Length: 358
Image (tube, rainbow, N blue to C red):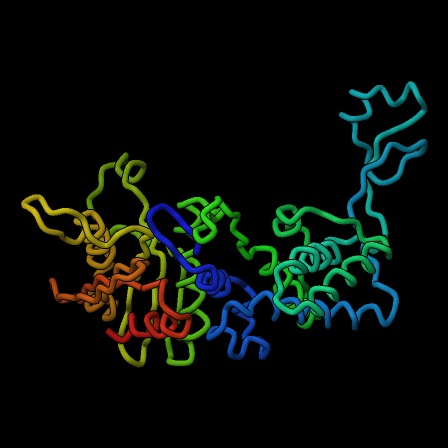
């Protein structure tokens, strides 16, 4: 189990969220078939993909690439780093600090794959696959690919894809996903573990996972998905300074189906759906309801028919709690729904599909 605040999530389901949030999931790779039912096998799947890729690549010399390099040289190469040259008084020693591109196999792509293999080796279930991950990581190292830490590898923004990189893209996205897998650290309980993710990161992960899931699956039913879209206030006669003070509105997920004539705004919350009522008992959180109500009503426009019947859904993660309530207000449908992250992966998938079937 992984602990985030008061929420306890099975590690396999955390990996499921990471899968849904990943760019690798968007590729629709055939290798993903069945993995949603058994997310605990995700490390082995990624390990197999990377090992197969490295085995294929090493049948011939590694393709070198240009990598940014910084060195103190006796003659100018590339661009001069004036600040370093002056601050280290290199000219007095007959040197100059230079920045240039060097042809090498130690490219960001190869480092990413090597880091992923090293990270996956102790994580995969199969002992033979674990051995192959370690062996291939060593082979890359022997060929000149230097090691890098996990965080640096996954955050390396210098990895770029071209139109001819379709096969490489899937492999590199698999490597990135591998490095994002959470391996919680024991806190002495033997059962409960606390993830290295903060509550804010958990909240962002849940939001991205829900958006990624609908983007990849709902399209087959005619839905278009937009995530993180800014929406404007339906305002008029504003004073000159009002625009600077009116807060911006940004939806988590917007789903639209022109055939079914439906538009849904989903706002994800990584907290409890219920709060203590003023006069006892429990109620839905008023602030959240006001927010989704505003998102929906502020977009009404006579020239946009879907805006007049748009739906608003507040989506909360939960463990052991199920809420699926809805009501109509001002011509719009509103719902408060939970997704139980303590259930099996296949049940989580079905819960997410049921959300837009309300």
